[in-house]
Image (cartoon, rainbow, N blue to C red; front, side, top):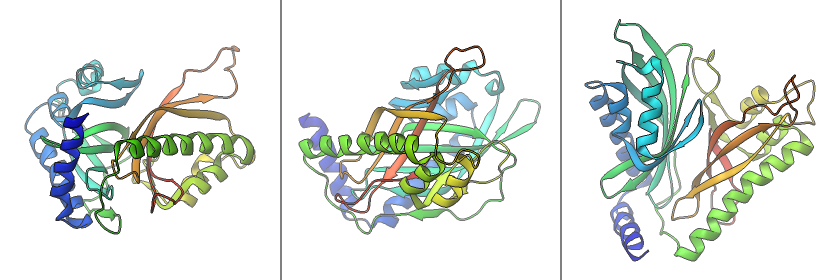
Length: 293
């Protein structure tokens, strides 16, 4: 615990001399550097290079934990065999202590025969001793890769201090409870209204495979997830199995599984789907709002 605390202090002191924009630009530079390196090697090596040892990645089998298991999962997908990838971040956000952040962007997967597949990605990062590394990661097939554009920012007002260890655990629980409350309210007011209530106006959703770009804003996200024929009911329920919190207590990510409320046609429960949601709050007394999913 003393070593972890000392590391947080070292990283915070480094970030303290920077503005939120400077910290975000540093994260963007790291993401772009990993992309440049990935373009020169295979997909599995390129993506694995940026993973923290305890990374959690969404996969067809669920949430895969650990860098080696994530690499094995990538290798198991035939679409990745012999492929190369490169990507461009289009959105970035950071915690108020400058040690956690996220990037979202667009990726091109090139197969050995030259065929290209457009992909969208979302990555949750932590600034570690070795530099920025990914703690949570997911990809989503896209319709096309949009033209390269300038990255947009979602930033705190200033770089602030990290909390003490006890406070960090309270902040972690408050974020876990926000995710649980989100799911509970969805059962009462409907999925769409719940996504509107718990979302930021600047929230990002990767969108489905037929969408070229992201779905932006709580209202637009609410519209794509809600069922207009059943506005006050939710077909699914969920909860956090793991919550990662920035030491500043204003930024974090929840990971878990979405489960259908009703069984399939054969009467058996349908397989759950993995999720991770990135959250932010304006202050330690402000409500948590999701900002990327």
